[in-house]
Image (cartoon, rainbow, N blue to C red; front, side, top):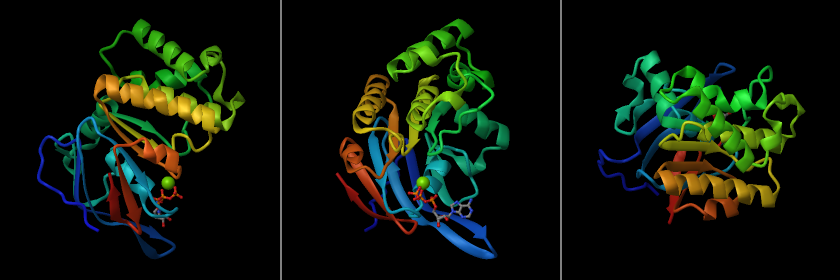
Length: 236
Ligand SMILES: Nc1ncnc2c1ncn2[C@@H]1O[C@H](COP(=O)(O)OP(=O)(O)OP(=O)(O)O)[C@@H](O)[C@H]1O
Ligand SMILES: [Mg+2]
């Protein structure tokens, strides 16, 4: 099934004929093979699909981490492939909070410094306010006592929660999360999702969550099913 894509300049994310190819072992892998989708500002959308369906590939493009795509991808009206490197980095820093499937915490920084990392790439917010927010977010994810520890001492689920606090630090208008509850027990997962949804509802942010968990997907307003690099269905 093809999702109906209407031209919409006010959408948070609009993809048309979006393709991403990788060369691996001399072969070409078509990770995304013509994705059409439109996600409205303030919407909470889940992306599901089998392992290898292209979910992380799509999220990396939406999150402005990769722009080696063909077709069109507009985030807040910006065609990402047209932005020069520095503008893209700036766009990512200002507009996007990214929770990686593999957390991507920096081992040589403390937990607190990891959470405050997005501020080090430039923000008009004062350092004291950044630290206050970081401490509060760590409190909210249940890790208030871990501010000065290195992340190496944390469990997988604790690292995941640090990664979520980091993504929320600058209150970005777009939150993209790749399996944000993959390493969490059901109760903690529920708590974390509440925090993400609260943030989304209070700030009007757009929330895109890749998940294998049907309970996590059920919380979204819409679920987009990816299969072999294409949109195979949309469930309201
Ligand atoms: N950097 C890369 N180089 C080569 N192939 C890649 C690269 N990144 C992704 N792929 C391939 O593209 C396809 C889609 O991968 P992707 O990581 O997007 O899947 P996914 O849906 O996120 O899977 P999972 O649920 O396991 O995380 C896979 O076949 C994968 O091997
Ligand atoms: Mg993935």
